[in-house]
Image (cartoon, rainbow, N blue to C red; front, side, top):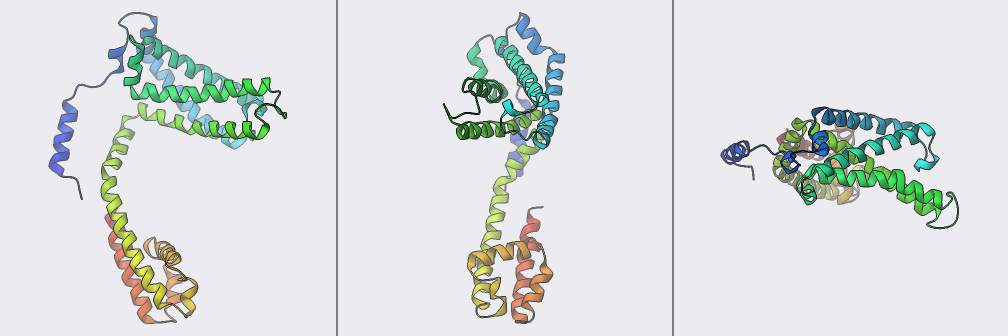
Length: 271
């Protein structure tokens, strides 16, 4: 169920013994493209633009009410075009720096950035060009509704740009890897919690039948949700006490047993 500590230590030692990965090993050794791609100032400038873009996503979300870029205010259009120009330029520099262009597939971040730049170009330039050619808004071509749906779908891909910040902060990647390593144990713990909730939900559904508390324990599914929120997450445990105490102290005692098992035991295993 739980990972072996010695095995994890051995795996960590093997990882530390490996030579540090550097995409530069696939670059040309001379030339303007590789010089720009390797330059520390170029990397720092890219990280600064990524951070600025992350902030701009929030500004655009709060203040840009247009569904498509073509209908947005000039400030938002200019900003999107500038970001698209820079990220396209950055991708081009890195692509041209590869000695063998197919080696770009070996670098995860280059592949990831390629998809992001592609969606950005589609949203900023391709969709805008299509709308201009179709004289949007109008009734021909793809149709207004189809274009709006495609535009909204492409706008959702903006959130994926936030993942590029992980490349600048390796500590975040370490935390994510730790969460992934603990996921198996967490899933088994949540499975145990689900079993406990299921058993007690059946008990309360049957015991509360034809009583005043039946409104909260009408079905097993409803009872499971009620016990999860009120018992396991302990959101309003006093409400359950006021509901069950007038009916039966046995029901109240059963609920307290559920809280001890679910909230104070299983939930604390996740901490």
